[in-house]
Image (tube, rainbow, N blue to C red; front, side, top):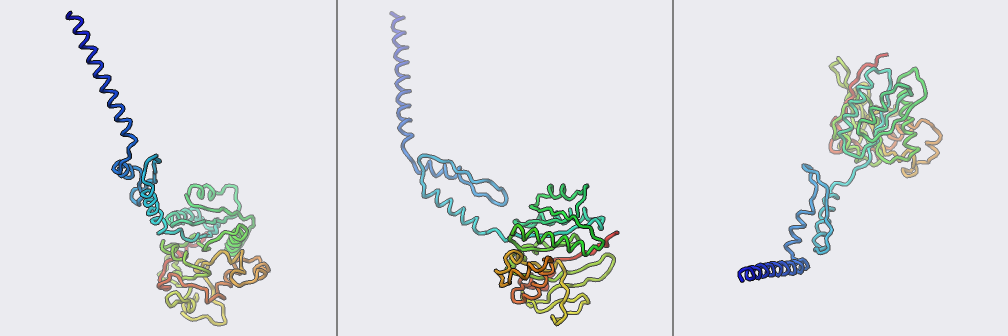
Length: 322
């Protein structure tokens, strides 16, 4: 009798456990189909994160069957409006010719690369050099982290200035051939920049010019070349003899790094009211652009916009060793 009573008690305990388990399972199963606003609110906080400058995190959205779509749309709209606050600027196309006449050209090229790497995108660096079998420029450009084009010249020159102008023309022909759209600036290896300079030239619509300070090694003298401005309006030019005067019948020399222009003047001159035959008649694109800068006084903008007399670019002259 005692053994049968104990067996009945065990069976009764197991029946209660199974019944309790089934009851909990059924309640949990139907509870999962009941949507609650509280569960979605906490889920939104976990699944959506907006990137900040301090901790750049990607946006992650978990797709669920039951959610408040309007709340997600509002969140996505707010994020889109934040991205629209800072639209991408114009492409800056920087042209740099190089020459082995200057034994420091590799060092100076790396220094310029370090500067351009700090400039906000988009930026394209067009580097031109004479063809060599043992060139280090290609490897340096690949490791620079900068978007670039490497143009090689096959011509030999005895004159350094002629070689530099030829390389600049090759770069301009490359821009024209590929119809690259942006603001073109000639950056010499000896140039030293204020980083705000590159943001200023993005505001150029057609042509822009600015003063440049020329410094020579071991000389306590600074020369200013470039435009003389009233705010952003070009009133005249600094001549090489440091005489502040306005333009007359004598065409003033323009420093190669003291102006920039919209690249479409090369491959779409009719957009600017110029006949395409004017440029086609001459292979010297550099000369053509310089003449356009001087002739387009109404479209020539002084840089910086607020005060064109402010210096943002220095030319540190380093003697070239033969």
